[in-house]
Length: 101
Image 1 (cartoon, rainbow, N blue to C red):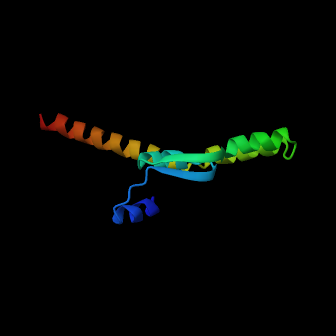
Image 2: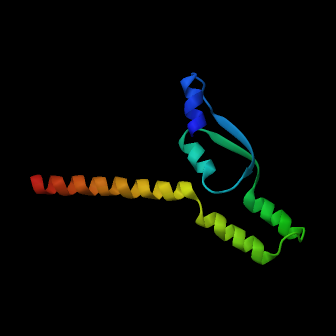
Image 3: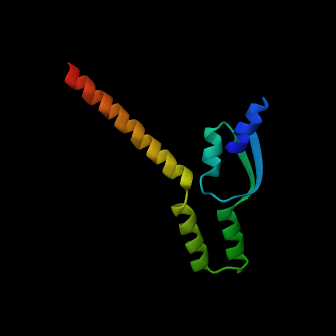
């Protein structure tokens, strides 16, 4: 996000980004919210499946990594917080309007 702001200051518009691996921790969603489409070569979950099929990792390790990834999606957490704050603002405004009438 910071790099995109820097490019915007030079009047450049970023529409797409290419990465080797999508860690599946909210990067795609975060960039999409900025109008940028992410093009990963591979995702972390696909890589885990490949490693599991090649018997380079066991099922327990794959499951542990998947659980870690799902629990550390920082963008979804931030979005949930924004939704809650917006809801509370609307609720507060609704309550204020109720008391005014």
